[in-house]
Length: 261
Image 1 (cartoon, one colour):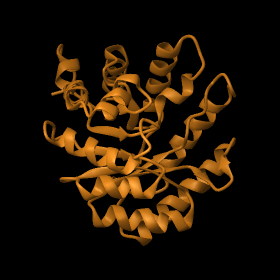
Image 2 (cartoon, helix red, strand yellow):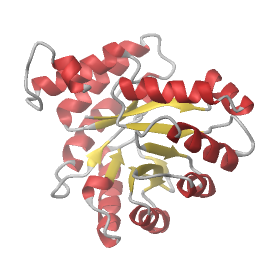
Image 3 (cartoon, rainbow, N blue to C red):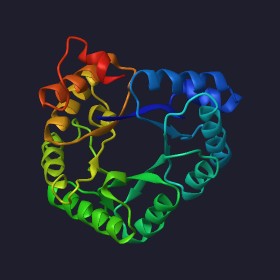
Image 4 (tube, rainbow, N blue to C red):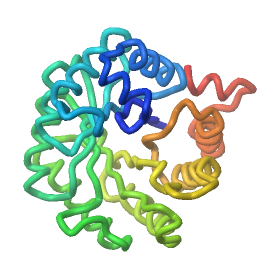
């Protein structure tokens, strides 16, 4: 399992205030706590916290790297903001994200290759998010094809089939499960599959329960990564236990602690 910690995001009030006030302590505390909770990457998203997204991304990356060695996931739809993060990055990282558009992939994949970065690639194109399994699979095939063209190996490719809120279209989780199962067999070795988990529960009352259940079911269909709140202990314990039930780890009475070691 490859958890990507979601909390260093300008959409959260504490992070927004920290960016505005250049308060390193808040950001570094979140980085350390998420790492301790099991995050393999830390998502870093300036969001709408400031008009100077380029400067803020540099500051966030440098601030986190002062105290934490966990690889970062640079999260922005703006290429100049991604490049700003890469300019001060130390070691391996991830870029989040790029659509399944051939022209954009021709920009982002060489960037990943040159900076030793993984890429989250979205199963959407210029027409937007598809409502069907078939279109998601078509987009996934484009991503895998272009990655091979640019010599980016599947182990550095994280395909996101894109979860939509269940209260908008209750069929969507089933479409996602079908897509995940089929994307896993599109290449050998298979690409990683990740999701922005919280999207599924947007606007619902039982957010935690829906998130936990969705994550466990995604794992059972082959997803091995997710952008999640790693500080949610019940969520993480459910994911770890799902991997145990799938025989991906050895049982011991302390298996929950062992998984985070």
